[in-house]
Length: 114
Image (cartoon, rainbow, N blue to C red; front, side):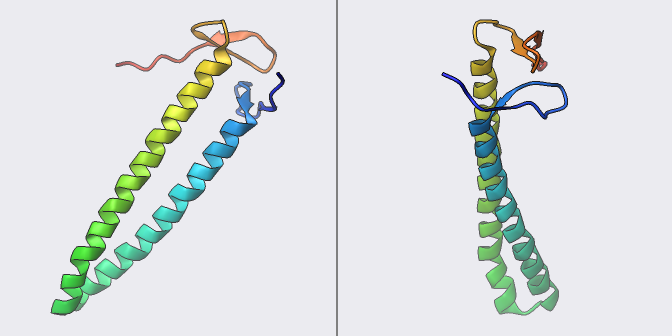
């Protein structure tokens, strides 16, 4: 079974196009949430500066929404990390501990200190 691959990562490592699509979708979701957070933060700041009791009360809900959005971004990045790790494991094939570069030669697997 042949897979579409992309080797434009600078180090020559091949990446499955499905993985790239997953990354792009997740990054678009993250960016959308971050854009929404920017608007929430602006509104929270305006409400705070106004010192109007109703606006200050409204900030409670806005801050909760902001916290939930941040939690969602963390989840998306965790899912991205997991997907990337799984894709790299599956791309290793039977060469445990190595990655294949675009020329097919094994490369060093980066080991994170732990």
